[in-house]
Image (tube, rainbow over the protein chains, first blue to last red):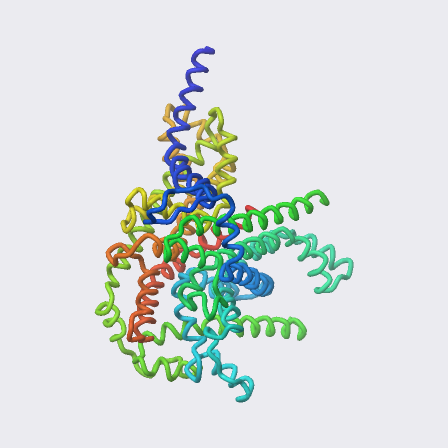
Length: 302
Length: 278
C-alpha cells in the first residue's frame, strides 16, 4: 500500500511540473531573468554596438542619472502627475460609483458609458485629445473655456505650454482611466451589508452621517487599493507622452519611462536605461509596501 | 414618491447626464469627425453643435487604406493578441491548477516567487528584455511580441484563487470513475471555471490590443507592427488630416468596443476581481 502511495505521489510531482513548466519557464526567461539582468546591467557600461569592452562601473550610472537634469525633471513630473491624477481620479471615481450605485433605472447604461474609455487604446486616446487641446479657435477646450468665460479666456496651446502640458496629459489620463477605478469602488460599495445602513437609520443618522460613518470606513481597503494602482500607473506614464508631447516642451512632460526608452532605444545606452528602470521599480516597490502596511494596520484594528 | 425624493432622483439623473455628456464629447468628435471632410473637422471642432456632421462621407476611410497598410496593422494586432490570449489561457491555467490541486515538493515556495513577480510591471524589465531579444535575434518579428507575454504571474494568481474556491467533490468523483488528470482538467475544472477564463482573456486582450511601448522598442517594419504603432505613425505622417486619423481610430476601436458590448458583464467582473487582490 505504502509503495503505491509513494509511487502516486511522485507521479503527482511529475504531472505538476508538466502542468506548471511552460508558465514557469516563461516567467523565468521573460520576467525573472530580465529583472535580475536590469540590476546587473545598471552597474556596467553596456552600450549596444559600442566597441568598448564590458566593464563593471559600480554606481556611476546612478550618479550620472541623478545629476542629469532631464531625468530629475522626469522624476518630478511623475510625482506631479501622480499628485494631480491620484486625488482627482479617485475622487471622481468615487463620486461616479456612488451615483451609479443609486437604486434608479438606467444606471447600467451610465456605468457602461463611464467604463467605455477604458477599452480605448491609450495611443488612440492621446491622438484624439491632441485635437481637444489644439491651440486657437480650432481647439475644443479653448472654445469651451471661451464660451464659459464669455470671451475672457485667452486661447492657448496647451500641449506646447510648459505649465499646461502636464495637466493636459493628466486630464486625458483621467478621462481614459476613471471608469476602471469606478468599477472597483462600485464592487466594494455593493459589498457593504445593508443592515449597517438600516441600523444607522434607526439611530437617526442622516445621509451624510451614513456616508462618513459607514460607507467611507467600509470602502477603506478598496480606496487604498485604487490609490495604489493609480499611483503605480502614474509612474508608468509613457504612451501619452510619446504621442502628445515627446517629453516637451523643454522636459516639462518627460517621464522616467520616456527617458529610459530614449536612452535604450535612441542612444543605445542600455546600462543607463537599466539604472533608470531600477529606480522606477524601487518606487513601485515602495508604494506597494506602503499600501500593504496601511491595509494590514486596518486588519489589526478590526 | 415624495417631492423630496423626486428632487433627489432628478438631481442624480442631471449630474449623471452632465458627466455622461462630457465623457462622450471626445468619442463623438472622433466618430462624427471620421465622416466629415477635413476642413470641417477642424473649423467646427470648437462648436459643440457642429460636432454632428451635415453629410456623411466615406472618403476618410478609403484614404486610410490608401495611405497606410491598415489591414496589415489590424491583422498583426489581432494575430498577436489572440496568440497571447489563447497561449496564456492554456499555460497559466495549467500552472495555477498545479498550484491549487496537486501536491509536489517546493510548491509553496515557487508559488511565493510567482506572487512576488506580480508586482514587476513590464516597464521595469523592458530594457533588459529588449537586450535579451536583441541577443536572441528576435527583433522585428511576431514572436518577439507574443512569446514573452504568454506566461503571466497575475493570470496565474487569478486562476489559482478561483480554482481554490471550486468544490473538490466533482474532481474526486471523476477520479473514482477513472478519469486521468488531463481529462479532469479539461472536462471538469475548465468548464466550471468559465468566469475566470473570461476575465483573464478579456484583461489580457485589452492590454495587448493597446500595447505601444514594447512594439515601439522591438519592431521597425510595417509588416509586423500593430495598430497602436500604426496610429502613432499615421498621426506623424504629413499631411496631417484629422478626418483620416479619426477614421483610423474608429476602425481601431470598433473590435474592442464590440467585444465590450457583447461581454460587458465579464469585463466589469474581470476588473472588479483585480480589486479583490487588495
